[in-house]
Amino acid sequence: MSVLQLSHVTKRYGAFIAVDDISFSVEKGKILSLLGPSGCGKTTTLRMISGFEVANEGAVMFSGIDMKGRRPYERNVGLLFQDYALFPHMTVVENIAYGLKHRKFDKAKIPDRVAEMVSLVKLKGFEHRRPGRLSGGQQQRVALARALATYPEVVLLDEPLSALDAKLRQELRFELKEILAAVNATTIVVTHDQEEAMSLGDSVIVMSGGKIMQQGAPTEIYADPKTRFVAEFIGRSNWFSGQLAPGTGGLAKFKATSGINMIVPVSGGHLTGGQYDVCVRPERIQIDAATVASAGTPVNEIRGAIRDIAHLGADLHLVVEIAGGQLLTVTEKYTGQTLEQTGQEVSISFRPRDCIVVPSGS
Ligand SMILES: Nc1ncnc2c1ncn2[C@@H]1O[C@H](COP(=O)(O)OP(=O)(O)OP(=O)(O)O)[C@@H](O)[C@H]1O
Ligand SMILES: [Mg+2]
Image 1: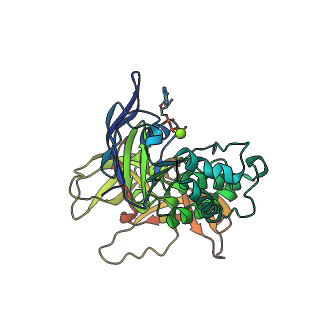
Image 2: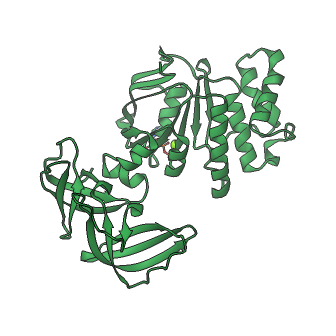
Image 3: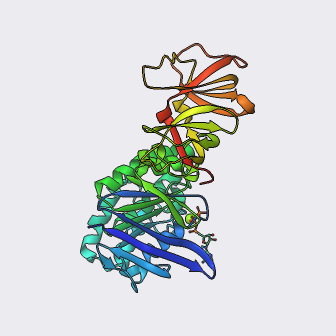
């Protein structure tokens, strides 16, 4: 049974719909990433799960039990908010113990539990410091320890790493994942950083305008987005808009409005032609590759000219101008190869199966 389940949950503020009929579930010990642009309803969703906000419609269930009418303190939730909200006048140990005291946890057992949490989040030696004398990363770990101390059924983390600088964010992302795994926490992580969502989550939900646009494993969302919105939100993308001919044998002809023709995949026969957008990820495009297609496997080839090359450590980012002045982004691994020159004419190629076809305007 799912530890957490939302069923057709809607939240309205007056006429405005902040969360619109969302349903999902999280299994024991799994991490769900909730991803989407600012204002799409992520925090509101967490607030309804924790009981700080009441849904207008739908049900929030913990292990099959409807939480309707239960106050926040009557729900076994561990919370971590963006600004951590640590008590500035309390030490690390007092902050971590706060929830345990508040929840009438067996008093005699509190010191042991706090010590356990201090060691879990690697803060030994800092027990008696106040938050003002801790780094951002250390404060974040105190907040996490406080959220996990009460053996919560559900852990809700709202932008847990957003107050940290980029380098620390990356380090703590891995640490956070390890800590959550160590306590087998059933977790929702809210973020608007797609990399963070993909690396933390066993599954990812992309929201927009209060609705769930797509849910799936990170790789599935990246490789098989169902709409242009999701494809653009997750990773870099190059786009062609145009007309799809009815397909046969899993492939179809696509004519972009710029005049470029290509072969794209069609699935399940539900693409019967019409107006579509085609996405090709930058890393799926090859420049001047030996495109000797083996029999029966067509390759899409386009002529273009290099407009820019940026050397970003292990990666090369190239901008290629093709027919109609359209600019494509291409990424390559840099392994010491001879670099193309700006202005150089090139042939770029990509396989039909590397094209993602979505309804136009989706
Ligand atoms: N108490 C409220 N009264 C009226 N509108 C609200 C209230 N709380 C949130 N909203 C609106 O509901 C929408 C969703 O807000 P929410 O805080 O869930 O967004 P979010 O996805 O968490 O965004 P962010 O990434 O910026 O934190 C927003 O348009 C917000 O203005
Ligand atoms: Mg928010």
